[in-house]
Amino acid sequence: MIPVASAIYAFCHSTDPQKPKFGVCVIPDERLFFLFNTKPPPRILEVGMMEVSKDQAPFLNYTSYLDTISLMPYEVEPLRDALAKRKVWGLHPDLREAIKYKVRIHGRLGGGREKFVLNNF
Image (cartoon, rainbow, N blue to C red; front, side, top):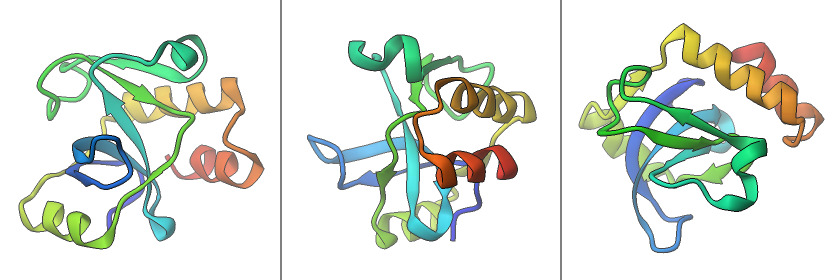
């Protein structure tokens, strides 16, 4: 449905509180995404967070932080809505490479998922 390494803006039922979030599709078949945050949670700042500027990702409203450790599921309907409303963007190749690098360095996704990111981003 959403191509791997594509950014979306869609309602996310997995967050607390539930709200629309920017995310990056990691495992399309499982609808798993890395999420952008306005502020990085301190527990994973040094390990899994990437600062991403509006220059790197023009769809963002301001500099945000991409959590490259936690995979969050989206439900099907919000993803369909994002596609219908054209709230899906390709990532710049440099940003894709930066995500791959971060995932490789922290090594916390687990073998199969890490390998998927490294081979498909």
